[in-house]
Structure formats: C-alpha cells, structure tokens
Image (cartoon, helix red, strand yellow):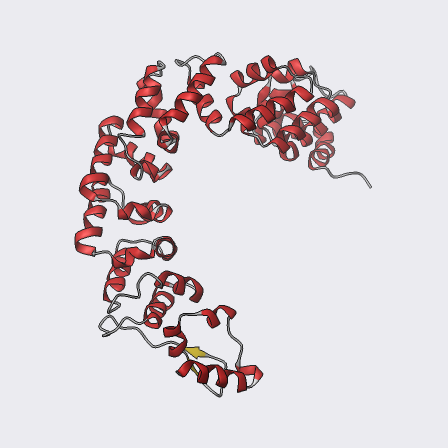
Amino acid sequence: MMLPTLRKSLALAKPHSLYMPQFLFSLPFSLSLSLSFNDSSSSLSLPPFTSSSTSASLPSIVTLLMDYVGLSMESAVNASSCLLHLKTTENPLSVINFLKNSDFSDTHIQTIICKRPELLKANVEKTLKPKFRAFHDLGLLGCDLGHIISADPVILTKSTEKQILPKIEFLKNYLHTNEKVVRALKKSSWILIFDIQKRLVPNIRLLESYGVEDSRLHKFLLRQPRFFTMEPKRIKEIAERVKEMGFDPNSGLFSHAILAMSCLSRETWQAKVELCKNFGWSEEDVVCALRRSPYLFTLSEKNLNMRMDYFINVLKLDKFYLVSHPLLFSLSLEGRVIPRHRVLKALRSKNLLKKDVEFTSFCKRAENIFLQRYVLSFGNEAEYLLRVYKGITEN
C-alpha cells in the first residue's frame, strides 16, 4: 500500500533530489520501502546493520556487504538475494570475520562473496575451519590461500572428509612433497574440484600407457595441472594424434605437443593447416615445424597469418627455412623481429659485420646481449643504430 505513495512523492520531488542509480528502481519491494529520502539532500540511507538484529532484512545485509566488505550497492544487492531467509546478519558477519582473520585481502573476500554468496550461510566451526586446517597443514595460508579460494570458491562447498582431504592425500603421495602440492594448487585449483578417480587418475594412467616417464609426468602436472582435469577420452584422442605426428613419448616435446593440441579443436587445427598451405606449405611441412615447436599453432589465425606474410613477403624467407626455424613464429613481430631486422639491414649496409649472422639467432638473443653486441659496441655508429632500433627516422 505504501509503494504508490512513495512513487507519487518521488514524482513530485524537485529534480535535483531525484538523482540515484537507475537500478534502485528495480530493487525488491522490501528494500524500496526501507530507503529513506531527505527533503533537503539527494542522499539516501539504509538501516544500519547489527549481528543481533531480530530480522536480517535485505537492506541490513546490503549495508553489511557495502560498508564492511566494500561491495558496490549493485553487487551487494545481487549477493544478498540468496540470504533473504536469514533471521540475523550474525552468520554472514561470522564468515566475513573468519576470512579477514585468515589474512584474506579485501579483494579476495569481495571476489568470493560475488562468486559464491551462499558461502555467507556456511557454519564457520563445522564447515570452513576443517577445510582451512587441511590447507594450513600443507603450508598454504594467508594471501596464497586467499588467491586460490577466490579463484574457485566452489572449493569451500566440497566435503572436507570425502573430497578435499582425499585429493590432497593423493597429490601428496604422487608428488611426494607438500611444497609441490602447493605449487600445483597455485597453478590451478581445478584438481580439487573434479573427481580424481574420474579425471586425474585415468589421465595419469593413460599417459603412462604411452610411455611417458613418471618424472616427466610430475613436471607436466606441476606446470599444467588443469590439463589433467580434462575428459580422459579427449586426452586419448589428442595423444593419438600427437603420436601419429611422430612425437616420441620419451621426449619432453611429447607432453608439450599434447598440451598445445589440447587448445585446438579439429576445426581450428584444419583451418591453420589450410592457412599454411596458402603460403606454400604442405601438411608434412606443418607437422615437421610442430615437431620442432609444438606451440606454433597456439597462435591465433590472425597472428599466424601476419607472421607468415611478413616472413615470406617482406623478409623473403623460404618455407624450408621457416619449417626448420619455427621459433621465429613465437617472437613478437612489433617488439622483436621488425626492430631487429631494421638493425640487421643497417649493419649490412654499413659493412659493420665481420661475418654475417643467422637471422633466428639474431632475433632470439636476450635484449641486453643483443644491444651490447649489435648496437652499443659500434662506437660512433652506436647512436645511429639505437635510433634505427627504436624506429626513429631522420628528419
């Protein structure tokens, strides 16, 4: 009954007193009634929150999330939508204080609440503390733990006894040290989300069946733990394709190739093969280049096309050179290849090189070594070469 009156009063108010975010007009009825307007200012206020309130009205929870957590009003309203049944703000406040006392940053807490606001209903003693204790026992706490949890707060919805502890125990047995388990979790906490017996274990056994050594698998898991959460059927398909290309499972390149191919659908793979064919490559050339540099096809089609065009049509490099030196494709055109090509042309035009240089080696040298050897060491020409390198043209 009060809502028409409120709307009428808003309609009659002076224009300067009506400014507020548009989304407030779509707030739930309970919140719209709690907004109080001051005739002499354009501000609006929400009832203050207390953990002992007899009713955790939507405004009190919104105020808690805004004033104590630092959420915007829109985010606070969205997060509070699953908390309306709570009778007090005591539990959300308890959870927030627990996260703060665990040395989670404000950003961590804000992210967790926005992603999983239902965690504000969790029982700190029975649900959260046992999970945190499991991580603390690994040596994972404070901001490091905050980073992991805020990336995937769904972890805190998993059973401690049935899911989190068994997964941690498996990782400890497989990787041998707590430090390595922590490294893997920092890379991707997905290994705590997916069923180990349906993803991680079958994928490890699958790669072992191809002859990948344990030491290589350990390194692979530490570098790319998320890969092991893929469907085993998908990994088997990729492993077969990589094996058909001639990659040796005992070589470190085998795992790199599998990882690179896991980023490509069959359609994307075929599109990039066709792109290379348009520049005169055969499918055999493509496979040969990939054996040398498995991440070649992780380039987008646009970037692959730009590099092909520059190497072939500008630098006049033939396909046999490119197939043999695919590392060139991994270098930035604008940041590395083009500036260094300018320097090489300048060195050649002034006959400053005692012997010519191999282009890929010239481009891949570390910046400080390159500048010292090919720019700064040429005395009176150093300033000129530096301008060439920076792309500064003569007036």
